[in-house]
Image 1 (cartoon, rainbow, N blue to C red):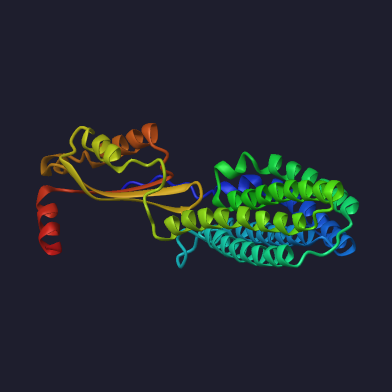
Image 2 (image 1 turned 180 degrees about the horizontal axis):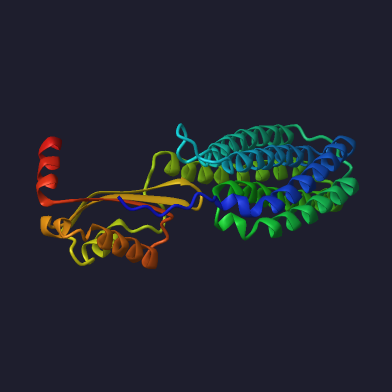
Length: 303
């Protein structure tokens, strides 16, 4: 068998950004809770609720990332790397629940509007808008590499859009006295949260169900493997993801008996590793070389 090991995770490179975002989120959370209570704005309270999920999600992501750095053992041969995906799962579920709660609360405000202090509402919303913009900038690069960071990025993005909605609602109330704008902004915040939760959960499900990673073309990989000198065919080809940034691949590769007898297995394994490393982003590859007779027996046993 041939191996190419790399047990680092994508989220570990962005721990500093996650910590900075967590601090910013907690500060804005307090500001929005106080501002929402004093001003009477449910939209601010709704945005604060989403900030709470942000803080919980980022904290969970940091904890999972720390677990993922623990070394592999005989009992956990990939260490705790899958903890990042479980954190993303919890994160997505929390985002979805909060989104639904915010929508329900917003609808109630539309049906039964309440007075709000629009000036204070506007100031607090602008503070949240600025903080979320900074957080997005901190997470932008990491969200392309890690589902954990992406979860935090999507939450902050939802908050930024939510802050925009609150700003608009505050301006509308100040200019026209239309109190239902506060409830409408709350519903919009919820509608921005739910689809992002669904998208994150879809990606997490793909990892947990060991679906082929995005960007990995198994047909192309099969073609490259079969193009290596001495390879007769390939079967039981699988590709999946341990955690963000750690795709893995395994395959049974058929080679002639004569090649094995001449002791050329090492050369074939090297060629396979170099071939995949040069064309595909797969962190961990395992190949089983076997003669045609073994392949026939294997297929017969599976029949």
